[in-house]
Length: 374
Ligand code: FES
Ligand SMILES: [Fe+2]
Image (cartoon, rainbow, N blue to C red):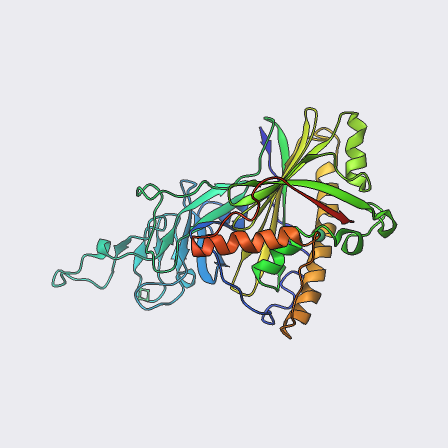
């Protein structure tokens, strides 16, 4: 049974620097992205958002199904969000055309008379496959120009990502932060091992003085790489806390294209897992979403608000750093990636190029060991 805490923590400073974004990057289409938390709200509700530069209207029908439409009427382009949603159909504000929102089919054109031969149901608004997972409405964004894809129309879609879970009962929480940089900087910031002691120094996490040499083993996985199960760094407080269970702690971190970082920490029967994604909002801005689930300290009161408080602080430190970095990036500086600390970033760029071009080898031909100090 799941205990859900679906409210979002909008971090202080979220949206900071919007409109002042740095350079754009190429985007990966043809995959699932988390569009909005809270599954788009309650039945009969809609929200607007943007994914990969596409304005979206995300909502939930009365029967509970979530949907995502391009927020543009196919008649004359007014945002559909300007109109009405009655829990069944979306009605455009301009001329009252009505659309079934899951498939986008037009079901009514009020101006038609018996003299008109036009069949409204032959007209479609753009809609996207939309599925709810971990309290997020995940949306499949096809390649530009590929046309409309509908769930169950026979198109083979990749699996919808999900936070791994290892028991029936667990708690969960979400965090969201807007980043004023392109998705590449968001992602390589996410996998960057060397920034911890500087960006995240805090008494409850780790101090700069605790920096020491680390050796980590990686192996290739499909469209990504895995930091193989290891005992986590002894210099961070949350791991020390888990030590109270007196069992060996093992953590595994996977990165998978286009934007996913899975972290799993297991300690006997106890576990903590997260799926962190960096999603392009536009070609030059992105958003970081952390969905976490755990059964550690299940019965200890206040663990969820405390975890959210520290999680928000932690993500807020990354966010603040990227807001500052975006300021620098607006001047288009040259950039460096060094060995070994930036090696995962190099792998990311190689994987992304291989996906975009449809050719190229996996950057890891087998297990690789990296060394850095952090
Ligand atoms: S613009 Fe939407 S119905 Fe005319
Ligand atoms: Fe960080």
